[in-house]
Length: 431
Ligand SMILES: *Cc1c(COP(=O)(O)O)cnc(C)c1O
Image (cartoon, rainbow, N blue to C red):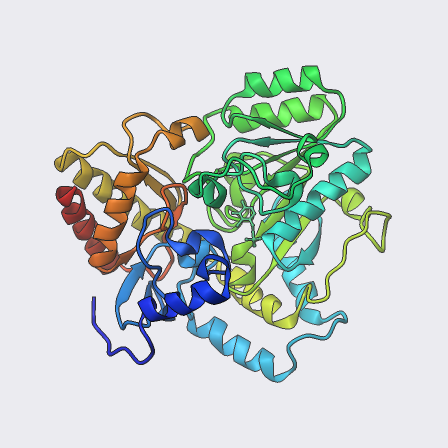
């Protein structure tokens, strides 16, 4: 990729300063490159499908801020709208029109959402959704799936995939045992085990699931699995929470629930709906959502919730995603990329399994199908680390962990995809 003169200190220098100032030198763990080794790149700017680091190197980016940047970085229309919005004030702590418009946009797109509450992160959305489920059912237990990540809320940091798994921590100190005990984990893609848990426990408030998992790498649901999860929860009077923070507006405009035709009780959103600014949301039927304060007794609030900047970036992004051809283009580009990468691996006789749903994908260094956490965890992380660095050296920025999904954006041109496949070919050979 094109070289630019470094105008700041190097990533190396900045990281040396950062580790003295911030835990691990970062504000979110996976960024520290511990899953792949080496020094994290400090990013100076981003444009379209690329990011540029302070050392002046530009990379084709498949992290996309971990999902939000579906239109590509610094989209001209989003940037212009944000500049205008900023001039009108950045936060009011009072209702504004943009909140109404973004709520309308979300409700129009996501089949199960009739009413929505904005928050400021995906973590806040899932924590609040669980409180709502417990509040309306009067039950306390929660079921989650091994390897699914739902943010860092106490009840959810049990077998939580991605960042936690990368560090090799099964769990986190600081989560009170009685609270962790309220969370039951079962393997993803196994309906029988879910049924067994329900026959052993009567007080299950909710099941929370990533309908397409992104946080142990991309792991799609097996045919019929989500249908079974829906049926089991309904039969047992537990609410089904689809955590679509990653999949919402990503795998389809209406998220995984549209793609698979399943209606959850509560849906959590984040990432894309903020267009690159901090945001989250949770929604469901009017009846359920009217249980939330001030309409109902379940309390939840936020100083910066619905702030005009996040609402603006989200609104512009979601309006653009009304154009179905964007999803068709993402599908084409992503299929070409994943087919190309898989072919390159076979040519080089490197065992890989590439999972993909729409523009979300992961290449696992393994030779068995990856359908749950156990099979994901069998992947060869050391090999992934070598592959990651071989790609980075050639100007391709993948997720710095085997257990993360990669994302294609609408700004990834054919040329970018072809360059990536060519880089992968060389990287596999170098292994
Ligand atoms: C990213 C993510 C979250 C957490 O969102 P934050 O904005 O990082 O708090 C929750 N659930 C899923 C499925 C995610 O991918």
